[in-house]
Length: 500
Image (cartoon, rainbow, N blue to C red; front, side, top):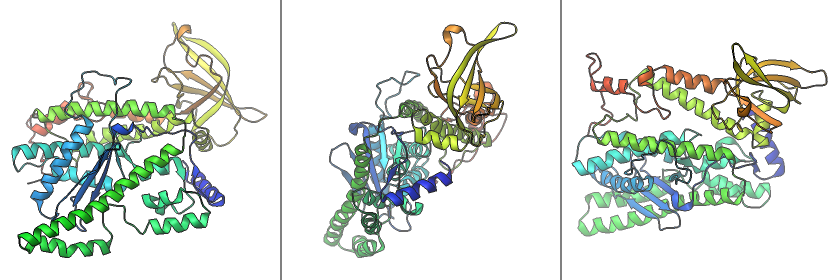
C-alpha cells in the first residue's frame, strides 16, 4: 500500500473514531485451533536467551517453563530442549514427506507469537543452538533441531507467502488501520485496547493504559527489579532459601508469560470476530506454506544424516544470498498480487499506484506466429485514466488464470478520447482454442508480474542448471561441496556461529 493512501485511511479512521478494515477479505491463512501453537518468551534485561518460555495449543492448558538464573547456560539449555521437543512434535518434523505436492486437505501446523521481540527471540535461539557443538549428545541433537526449527520459523515470518509463523500484532495491522501513530501500533496490547466499542477518546485512553503494560520479551523495570533479590537468593542462599526463591520466581514469571499468551489468543479472537470472507489468496499461501514445511522436513532429515546445516548468521556464499533475496522479494510481490482480484480495496491501491490494470475484455482473438504457433491476444478497456507504471513489453499476471504460470505481455497501450485506455495483452505461451484462458471472464485484473518473474529467473540463473536452488532456498550441491571443502581444493568455510 502506498504511503499516501495509508495516511488517508488512517485519517479516515481518526474521523470515524474507530479502527477500519484495510481489506474486504481475509488475506491470512489461520489454521484450525488444534493446529495453532501460541508461544511467548521472557528474557532478563541484557540477556539474549529466554528466562521463561510458555506455549499453548488450542484450548489445552498452557505449559510454562522457567529457570531461576537465566545466566546459567546449563539450565537454559535444558529448558530450551524441552520446549524444542514440543515444537518439533507440533510441526511434525520427524515425519518425512514422500509426496512432491501438498495434499489438498493436509494440515498446516502454525506458530503464533505476540510481536517482533518474540520473533527476535526465535532468531536468537537459532543463533545459539542451531549449530551448537559441545555437550551431551542427546541434549545436543535436541537443541540443534530446535534451533533449526526456530530459524525456519523466523524466515517464514518475514515472507508474506508463508503462514507457518504469524506475528499477531502484524496480522492485526494487515487487516485493520488504527486511528493512531504507526509506532504505537507495534504494541499488541494497544491494538487490542482500540478494538472494543467506545468513543475515540475512550479508545485512546484504554490504549495508553494498555501500552504501559509490557507484552514484549522484556519485563517492566519495576517488576524485574523486584525479581533481583530472588535471583540473588537462589544463587547464594541455602537449600531452603533457594527452593523458596525458585518457587516465587516461577510464580511471577508464569503470570507474565500467561498474560502474553492470553494477548495472542485475544488477537486471534479479534481476527475471527471480523468475519471477513477468506480470500482465495489465503489458499495459495496455505499451499506454499505446506510445501515450505515439506522442504524443511527433508532438509532436516539430511542434516541429521550428516549434511551441513544452514547458518542462521550468514549465507556463506554470495550466490546463495542473492538467490534467497530474489526469491523472497518475488514472493512478497506475488503475495500482494494474489489478493488483488478478490479485494476491491487492495485493487484500488494497486490501480492508484499504476501497478495493475482493471477493465473489461472487449476483444479476444487467436493469432498465429509463424510458422504455426498460436497465441491468445486480449484487448482490455480500462475506465481509469490515472498514472500507469506498466509499459509495453511488461509482463502481467491474472490471478484467476487456471494456469498459474501463464503471463500476459503488454503489446500496446492506447488512450481513448472518452477517458480510459485500450490495453492489448498477449499470452506468453502457445495455446490452442480449447485451452483459451479466462473462459467466460469479462471483468479482469492484470497486476504487475515483470519484477517477480525476473527475480525468479535470476534466482535460478545464479546457479548452474544442475545446482540451481529450489523455491525455498535450500543449499545446493555446489554450496555443500564448497562447505565441505570438496570443490576443486577449496578449504572448508568456517562454521563457528556457536563455539560451545
